[in-house]
Length: 126
Image 1 (cartoon, one colour):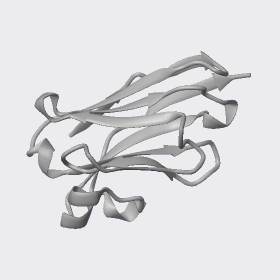
Image 2 (cartoon, rainbow, N blue to C red):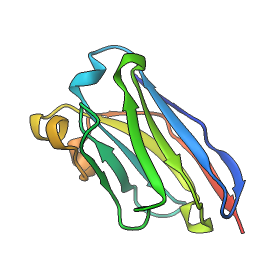
Image 3 (cartoon, rainbow, N blue to C red):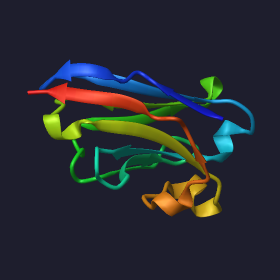
Image 4 (cartoon, helix red, strand yellow):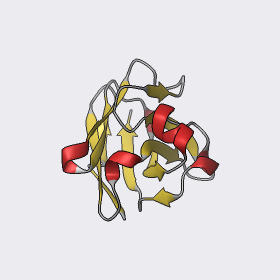
């Protein structure tokens, strides 16, 4: 089970940190990802991290502004979001991928993820 938190309302240029805590299973075996879904749009990739936390991937739209990290001792993955823009407004979802390649390298594809959190709303005002 994945529980996401940390969303909220922030002004453009501000920051938020999302957290996603896992229960059950061995967290350190999973590649983790963050996705987002704006109203009326498809769910899209934001960032991923491999099981050791060494390898990360980012969508072009957030590169340089967002940072994904994880603490395996706390079964938690984070998404630090800086320089937020109104177009970052969406529901943010964390997800876990169990395949070997996603565990070792992280994955961008939504279909690679088997466990999903409930989502947390991020709203950026202009």
